[in-house]
Image 1: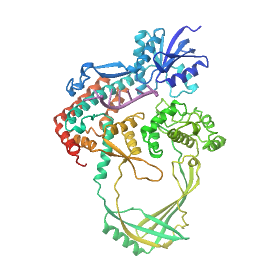
Image 2: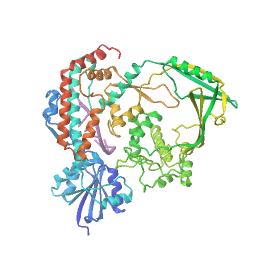
Image 3: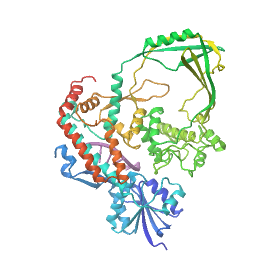
Length: 625
DNA sequence: GCAAGGTC
């Protein structure tokens, strides 16, 4: 008979269920808990090598259990000068809607000897693990705590993790609590300062919260930055040499190796030298196989970028729909940074589930029938989730219009990952005319392979090039010197914005779309549909007069680092890393960062007139940006 | 009434 009791806690119900099913091997009891419809307790017995036969309760939380806020005395906006929020006492409380879950943990812990944590193996997961631990300790101060190391919920992997418990990583948990404290203090202090000072300027701002956040401001900064580049753009005239040769009734345009130059006299001289030479000579003829690589396994950032580019939805909508598809069990967990499938992942099994799909079933059949290729591996692995993939086949009739689009994208992407690269033949011809070099490039697509299913990528054969012999000379059919103008950049599109956020570490895969939504809700930016390019309908971002005013106002304050640029956030990221690697403590990081931001805050307060002037200029007088 | 991060 099993002797000891063990309490297992996952970060979310889906993980608890999957792990319980694998460990229980069929014999498990499911119980609802009081007060929460999502969290369940699974009970079964399991023989852990470390602890012997145990009576197991497997349950979960729903992400973070607690939240940090200011002490009651500082909660009202006018209770203190905003600067005091850098030092004001804070309290960690169970979030109101999580009380039932917390009670369940404490209660289950009472009779358990061991708490075995199954939170995600990432920084936030480590912190959530620590939150669960302190809750369990309330129920049983003597409970022993371990955690499982796992990166997916495949059966063998889960069993391995159950056999090899490790310790919670305190450093990672501390790094997260540093982030939580800094975001709260800095965000609240600047938000109250801005809102209280600027609202008074105009009745138009009466009900506007003018928030500041370490992610939302850099996000706004990217939009404003591009806006300035569009607005300040001055077209420049350039000159170039264009040559064409007609052979076998095919007009071949050769491109100048220098592309174009901004000095007319120089181009004139070079062109005259060419004309003197009369004949052009073929200096390179190369035909070689080429390929277009199949895409990498799908991450969240990529889903948001490609979704906002191809699906006529914005990233926030794409994520909301992906979440729904996940909850219905059609696709895997939609928040992942991993772009590699582990070696033991049952890809063929997943492909077989698509065989009966009316649209791409036949393509899946091709893969299962022998064309299957192991997906490429990207560089990222969050050690918590596999790439996004379809889990079961969803017939088009059971999905609404947006669900259909997102499910189709996820599935086509998955099929493409398991396909062969597209194959083609590239031809490069280089000629010399006088002292100048020109080249022509041709492509023949030979096998479309993954392109047959991944309709979002375009790779098409160019015009067939006639044959040229190395060393032959010939007279060009046409040669001109011509001019052109540089074209302005366009406003930032949603996929570009997400790309910038990702590259600069602004937000996480799960929150990027929220930050974008936030700066829209705050009326800092507006979006409009970019003039249609093909069948796509991508959104472009234009800052409002308020958004420009805020960024300009801060730029006019003499700060060492700009609050609208990603540096400060990047620095925070590096400091968190330092905590994880044991080079700094949580307190050191919090103190350092608060000192730094306090200084920015004091200067902002001192030069608040610069901010007020800017906002007045743009918003109150309705001056056009 | 503030942040950003989990997840439903």
